[in-house]
Amino acid sequence: MRTSTLARPLVVVAAALALSAGALPGSAAPPDTAPDVGDGAELDGRGGPGGPGGHPGPGGPHPGRPPAKVPVAVGSGGAVSTVDPDATRVGLDVLRRGGNAVDAAVAAAATLGVTEPYSAGIGGGGFLVVYDAASGTVQTVDGRETAPAAMGADAFVEDGVAIPFEEAVTSGLSVGVPGTPATWQAALDAWGTLSLRDALAGATRVAERGFVVDRTFAEQTAQNADRFADFPSTAALFLPRGAVPRVGSVLRNPDLARTYRLLARDGVDALYTGRLAQEIVDTAQTPPVAPGSVRVVRPGLLETADLAAYDVVHREPTHVGYRGLDVYGMAPPSSGGSTVGEALNILETVDLGALDETQSLHHYIEAASLAFADRNRWVGDPAFVDVPLDELLSDGFAAERACLIDPAAALPKPVAPGSPDGTYGDCPPGADPGDGSPEGTSTTHLTTADRWGNVVAYTLTIESTGGSGIVVPGRGFLLNNELTDFNFTDTQNGADPNLPGPGKRPRSSMAPTIVLQDGRPLLALGSPGGSTIITTVLQTLVNRVDLGMRLDEAVAAPRATPRNGTSIQAEPDFPRTGLEALGHVFADNPEIGAATAIELLDRGKLLSVAEPERRGGGSAGVVRPGR
Ligand code: GLU
Image (cartoon, rainbow, N blue to C red; front, side, top):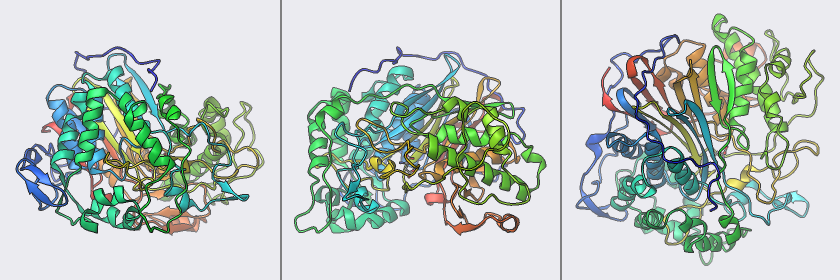
C-alpha cells in the first residue's frame, strides 16, 4: 500500500459541541415504550477460550441464546449502531475508554469482520464518510476494491457472451484488491486517536473467544453451504464438522484472530506487500477448490503488484442542499451520493409534506427512477470516465428532470437518462435506458458518534453474501467478489461508464450519508442492499425530513425500491393501492435493506437506531443511556 497522500496528522478533538436538531419536526426521542438501554455492556466478558463449533471454554461466550438486540437507544456520551450486538458493544467500549467516533467505527467494523463475515471483512472494501468536528467539515475515504492491472473491458466475456453471473460470483476472477484494511488505517491516521493495534483489540478477542451464532448467521451459512463446501478452507471455518452451525452454538475464528494480530504488529502493509499479499494472490489465481468438486471456478488476474499499488482515495463528498439541510454523501465511484442527491434535488421542487401519501410516494418513486436512469448512464470510476457530477447534482438539471413527473400517471419505465450538460430548459426527448448489472444484497452499514461531535457513516462489503465464497487458507477471511459490480457487457449503447478496466473501481451503490443542519451534524445513516441501498437511504431521509416521522419510525417504515425497472420491488406493508391506480407496477420483496442511523437531538442527546426486524434486527447503543 502506498502512503495516503492526504492523510492528516492525528486529530484529538477536545471541545464538546452543543448539538441541536430543534428546527426539524419530529426531532425527539421515541416514547418510553422504546427501550432506552442498549449499551450491551452486560454482554461482555462471559466465559473463556472456547473450542471451535460450539465448544465453549473459560473466557468466551457460552452456547445459548444469541445476545439480545436493541433497535433503539437514547442517551449521551456517544453512540454506535450496527447490525450486530458484539460489534456495537466493541464500538461502545472504545468510546467509553475515550476513543472517538472514528476509532469506534474501525473497532466495530473489525468486529463485523468476525461476526458478519459474509458481509464485511478485510477481504473487501467500502466507503467511510466522517464529520470531523475539529475542522467542521465532512470528508470521505474511498476504500473501494480495484480491478487488477490485467483486467480488460471484456474480462467477463467468453466467446462473445457474458459469463453466467453466478459463475462470476464464485470465482477468483471477481476478486478485487481489498480496500478495507487500508481504509481503517487511513481513517485512524486522519481522524482517529487509536493505533490500529488498539482498534483491532476488541475484534481480535471476539474472533478468539467466539460469538454465539444467531438465526441470520445460520441462515446465511445455509444459503451458501453448497459453494462453501467446495472450498476446504471455507468449509473448515463456516461448516464445522461439515454442517451449518446451530443457532446458539459458539463459532470461533482463531485464524482471523492471528491475522488481526499480524496487522496489529506489522501494519496493513502485511496485507498489501507482505506474505499475506502473496497468499491472497495465490488464492485468487488458483482458487483452492475441493478435490472432486465439479464447480466451474475461474481463476483470478490479481498480481502482488496490484496489492502493492493499492491506495485509498480521500474524496470530496457529494453535497446537496435539501429543505435547508446539507446532505453529504459518497462521490463516484459510488453512485450513492450522486443518485440520492439528484433524487433529493428533484423532490425539492415540490412540497412533499403538503401532498397526500399517494402523491408523496409517487414523487419519491419517479424521482428515484429518473436519478437511476442518470446513474446508469453517467456514473463510473472518475479515474476512467468523465462523470458530470456537478451537473448531475445541479438544481437546473433536477428541474429539467422534475418536469417529466406527471402527478396523474406513472412514467413508462424504464425512463431514459437525461443530459446533464449545463443547458436546461424544456423536458428533453428520451434516449436509451437500461442497466444490466445484477447486484447482491449483502454488505453492512454502521454509524457512530462521539461526545466531541464527530460522526461516522461507514458502509463496507465483500459484495455478495459470502463474497466469492473463498476463504484465504489459514487466514480466516473471505475474499470479495466486488468486480461483479462492473457491467459485464455494454448497457449504454457504447457509452457504458461501468465496464471493467485495469486498476478501475467498479461502480458502487453504497451511500453512507451525513446530514448537517446549520453546519452541525443532524443525521448519519446508511444501509446494505446493492442498488437498493440508494432508495433505502433516500426513503429514510424523505420519511424523516418530509413526512414527519421520528428516525426510528423512518427506518422501520415499509420500503419500496424504485430503480427504473418495469416493476418496483416493495415490502408487503408498503401502501400500493393508490400508486397502482397511477400505473405503478409492484413486485414483492419481503425485506429491503438493513439500515443503521444516528440522530443528534437537543442538549447533546443522541438517538441511535437500527432495524427492529429486517435481517433479524440490528443493535443500537449509546454510552450513557437516558433521556
Ligand atoms: N457491491 C455493492 C455495492 O457496492 C454492495 C453489495 C450489497 O449491498 O449487496 O453497491
